[in-house]
Image (cartoon, rainbow, N blue to C red):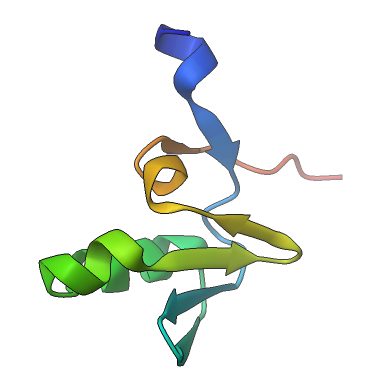
Length: 73
């Protein structure tokens, strides 16, 4: 895979939870969760995950996240 196939599209405005070991940090948006993840020390950062609804993104998936605007009805 390369280019567009490697990207994971997600709505960055959706609420998300940063999972840092036993610590759950509720964030207003997926974008906020990614920023909070970026501020973690390296050993914790590489082990953390982000949950959006029923989907849990691993560290390697978080690095591939790309914002996609939701369509208005």
